[in-house]
Length: 232
Image (cartoon, rainbow, N blue to C red; front, side, top):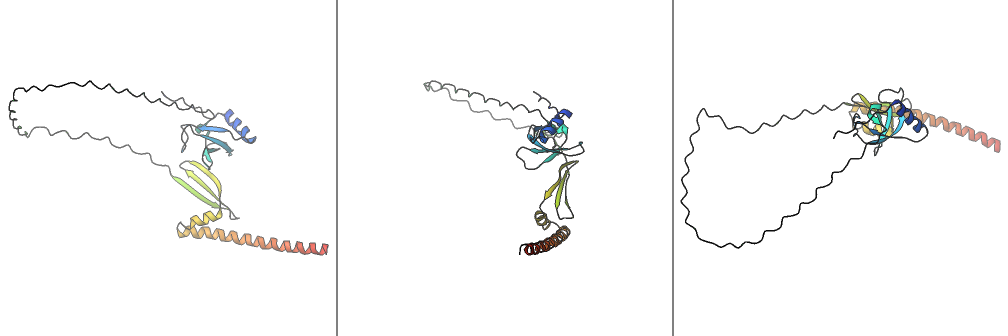
């Protein structure tokens, strides 16, 4: 029996999800067969909406995962799928009763006739068709070409790092924060040009923060001296 098609999110459904998220209650949604990279019927929680409200602008965290992914309304539904019915195992067939023992009485019969000689096989004719070869196996189906994945690391002027993931034509992760130490460790495993570029950004950020610390330390010492003069 064909499965009932799940309705995708309507405008009213999206408004209701926004309202529940604003009230601090992330609503549950389920993935349709149009969802990319997630099994149909799996559940998740709506965690954010991005602007503009078009394309993959709904941020959902699938149940059991820690990452937030982007989806379009056609890939989600608020209708919970019906649970799958389990087919009961067939009852075991009772074993047939054992036959009653039969007493055999041996009676010698006439001696068997000698076997007749088998005729020699006829030589194969030149025009005889060759034996059929084994059945041809169907050609294997071509597998679908996997979608290309693009991972982009970006740094800010303050030395903060973010990562974007583009899976084919769909952005599954947008501007997610990444620790600078993790970026530095990963860059050491990549070509030297990548390591040098990352290290230059980290060095500049360290110098700026060090200068800021020295400035704050000087301001703190000046404030402490002023306080000592007032209380002395």
